[in-house]
Image (tube, rainbow, N blue to C red):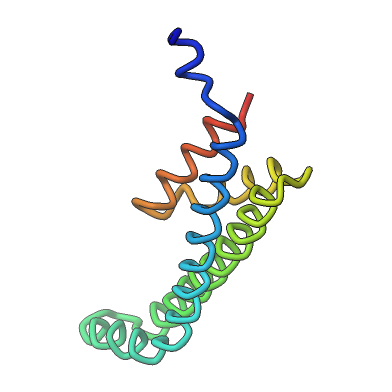
Length: 127
């Protein structure tokens, strides 16, 4: 078998495997977002315990809440786009490439699974 055939593979296989991976990743990210919401009180108490020796703990606590809310929103958005990309890839729909690229760009910051899946998607779908 020539090397070009080995490298090319079957694009349908890549889409199906990638669709399943994005679906699993999306569900996990939504679960993590819900988990972050449920444990927000514990996270606040734990971060607040670190602020006993700083000059202005109230400003840092409000910054913590902003960052924590941003992480929750990012996790849920990554999960939604991951699920949408997975369903579109499995159904072989036309917006699958666009949804997969959006999900890949959003998930690259989440080490190790989001980075791996995002880079693989970017290599596969970017020209």
